[in-house]
Amino acid sequence: LAGKTLPTTALTLLMRDGKPYYQAVGGMGMDSILVDAETGGVLITPEPKLATRFFRQAHFYYFAGSWQITLLIIFSLLACLSAMTGIYLNCVYWFGNKAAAS
Image (tube, rainbow, N blue to C red; front, side, top):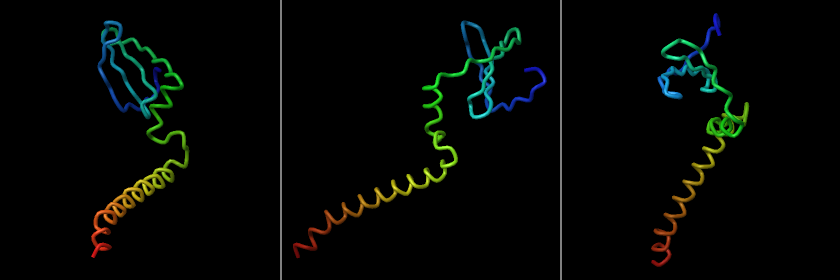
């Protein structure tokens, strides 16, 4: 790691095995190293398991690749359409019966 430029997005002090470590997180949170706060030694964190990576990234539509924005817009429009339909049907149900009874 010496001489490499590492983009750091977060720096956290934590305890691991009873010793203080600084965790330097880079990128989208996937790459991190642990720096021993007492000695300065570096420990590279192991790669998370496949299931852990999937659930960390799923809320960013990571699995969709280049379709991320398109899917986000489509599902947002579907959610809006569903809400508007529900509001319309509720208004028809409550206020439509009075007009038909008159």
